[in-house]
Image (cartoon, rainbow, N blue to C red; front, side):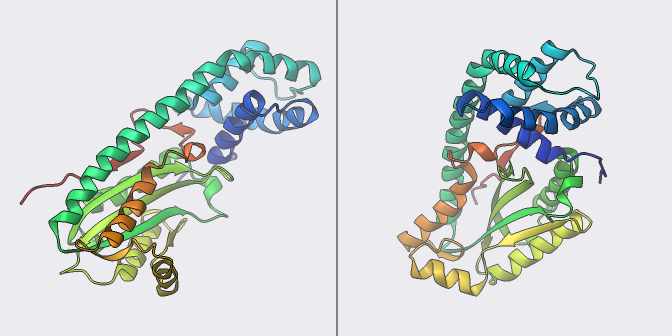
Length: 296
């Protein structure tokens, strides 16, 4: 794993947010100058050390605009004063439409992903009288995530996906799965939402499965990973009381359980999570996927 002098996930998240706040929330003046003076140098360092990555349209707008104003070789002692920050606002406005178009394209893609996921999940539920649904979030420890690059994240996720494809360890008797890669809006942390279905005639404890998957993630990340599971008994009782329990044992002939399970699965493709899309990614990197249903 990389040990860097900059926090890739946070810097990309903060720059993306800064540009959108300038264009759509009227960020300007002293607040803008302070943020630019805080972010510009670490962002440029990160950008030139990792020049083979793809970025969001907002980050591309920031990069292109600052190069136009200052040049490709950035001075270490650059200070963003009022005049420079005003010029940047003008330059960024040229990219407003491309950033809006990215949002619309993302929403369309999420709607397509959701249709495919609903069809896939429907087949998984209908194929068995009972399925065991497991939902887990794979992420990183707060005091370690600043070391994690997008390349590290992808490498760790691929380790888990390899185990899933081979149906090994805690993925034995798995009947289906789906995953989505995201980047937190508040802190920029990389994380993965994973929903899985198991044959309930062969696997019984969703809590134990979730715990074992979390431990496999910690192993794959060499101790810097952590996880969040909703499968503890107290949380499941609360969800059941509210009529929202969609994890654990799901009966095909119980419409409410099936509906709740669909809500859990389609959280991966929820269109309201645009702020959590990746702001940096590897070329040709998939951010969403699910298994294939094979008729027996």
